[in-house]
Image 1 (spheres, rainbow, N blue to C red):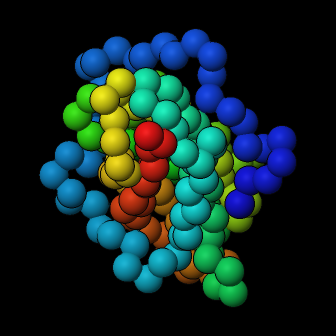
Image 2 (image 1 turned 30 degrees about the horizontal axis):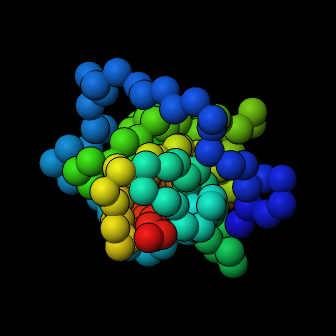
Length: 158
């Protein structure tokens, strides 16, 4: 979980990515990580957003504790796809985490994206996100390409 200086505030300037970015698993065909080999933690900064203002979403993914799970750094990098509800804007929808420098590693992977609430936002926005990653079990265990759905909630102040 990010703490202190790791919890960066949203950018002052909100630049959007091009609209032609496509989701990496649009039909939900990648096998889901039902064994929870990787765990996700989401932190929103600030924890509540005002209508028309931005927040930064921090997503931390790490191999499950107590299991000999590690990232396969020789495969494609971890990707995170984020969808916002109508009226909300995302700085980017597709994020990629940097790969480790050795073939196998088990460090947490951090991704961040800014989101802007519409001027008429109320309640709690529910964003949907999913991560795609290659992980392996044990030293010479099976490697898998998996998907983890990650719910994200952004409360709105009145």
